[in-house]
Image 1 (cartoon, rainbow, N blue to C red):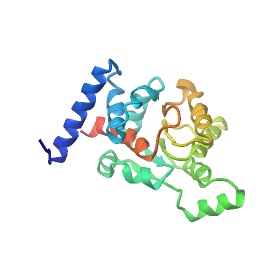
Image 2: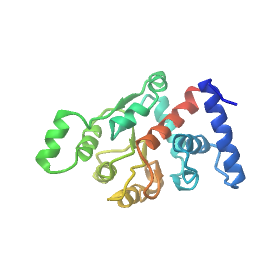
Image 3: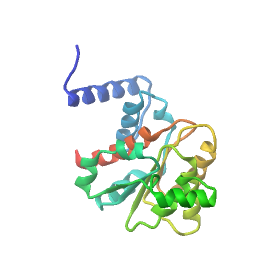
Image 4: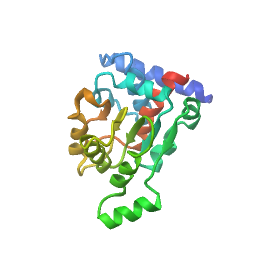
Length: 210
């Protein structure tokens, strides 16, 4: 039977995901399950049931930040586009991406570094609580780690889900090494993407807005 209603399609998709996770004997803590299911829904990849790592209390800290109208910073316009604008507006959250800003491009060229690095530095100067959703650029994660180590940044959550082959594992390990001191959700290994980063943000927002 073909399902045409979008809400019904999503509901049925989640039922299928829940059933397949159960069939695989995978038990995910309840507070994390909506995030894992949303990522699987976005990718059709059940590997995320095993490779999504949550620091202790990461979901709770993220929900508190969202309720307080935090800024959500992405490393790509694609991730920004994938985050539900209505849900963010309901929470009073702004979604920011500085990758296309002329000043970021000019500074990156002058310094001989990536725009992702400069955009994270720019984001660190935003007021209020911050959530970072990184789905593409490992240098964004490395910049976040350097800013934390320098005492210039204290994010409420770091989503580390860049995809690829160069600097990926090193960047993710840099965030994982923060321990529980800085909340993080990391897609371990090479997998990830802007859609994964956006799906994690959406799953967290939906826990409050739906």
